[in-house]
Length: 532
Image (cartoon, rainbow, N blue to C red):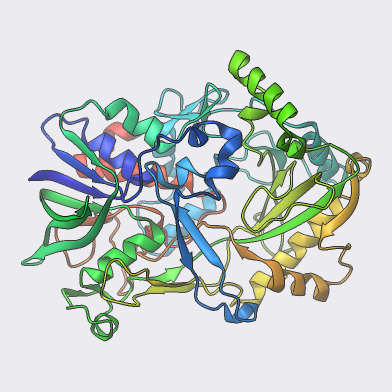
């Protein structure tokens, strides 16, 4: 018997488990289906390219994407303690203030920017910024890059040569401009949610952490969640929760677990062979994701991190890191940032760029023939397309059907096509000309909007920022209320990126940790203390 059971050891789950266990009279169980975060590749920033392609991921095959000619791409999510925060590029972004005002318009009263800002600050330990919009002394280390490649600096200058302003802080409340991302690092090491929140809490006697534990079902008795069944070391174990069960399994895992537990659209559950516990039609709907484009260029020489594929350069970088904890090993590779306008009528930036001084770093991007390349990644930060998560089987071990329905809205394609135009134009500016040999993907500068739209449809892919499939709100399609309680079931909450009514304009790790902080405060009854 536990007081609280937290399902999923990702960014929100780590946060909530740590905060709940601060109360010595609360007994907390955290269940994570992946392994512990022991792998050294997790903690050295530059090796994120290994974690993002390795075995610390759950790999889904998406449904055929009808707006991309029936492509069936792979879609990955973190499956390790720390979740996405252990395998991502460590970019610290909150989204823009209007994102949270839009949540309020969608029925999430009390989740406006002024409401969530205190929780961002509570989590944050920023090495450079403080004051009204930044926090110091929180669990999550946020720092400037310890090493920024000269090619990234040239790219930022090139954007300024186009007339784009320099932005020293994308999280100030104003996103527009080019700059360098702050990252979730501390002392040259990744600061994942597992490092920030669980590491200090591991020795608490009231916190039990079980990795390699797959939750199979939420147990509901008389309209109340009273525990879970999970698979560990070949045995099915039942754990009971006296107070609450909190599902933090992500935008795909959370709706899947609810549905196999009988909570979801009744007709669909019956068709899948699941006994209906509670008819909740919004479960699995409203799935959203940013959509990625990769612009890859071949360079005229060894002007990128690609040269570190050679052992000699690796040895030098490793020695520098060992002696001084700086240099290329401390790079997150996704160093340069740009938030800009993809729609003349939108007063807010709708495009986000990541510049990588290397090629073939992320899944979906390619190396170049010479071995020396750079990559500009661009996605639309507020897509209009919506998809869904549905069951293929009543068996919780069978992956669900996942369809983000990319590019269903023509608006998204047009916005991304403008993003391609801007991205290619930056690489033609004076500061980048001396480094660039030729465009590799696409193989030429695309001159027309039609060519760019075709490139978007043929080569784009998900940015792996799923959200929204257990939406917060107050209408019939909302899954959770503004306290993140599952509507119609007592003792059960969902708290992760799946509750977002709309995906925020940026990377999702920081907002998901914010959701975790606020959920824990709601559960502990400490709302006032966080705001002060």
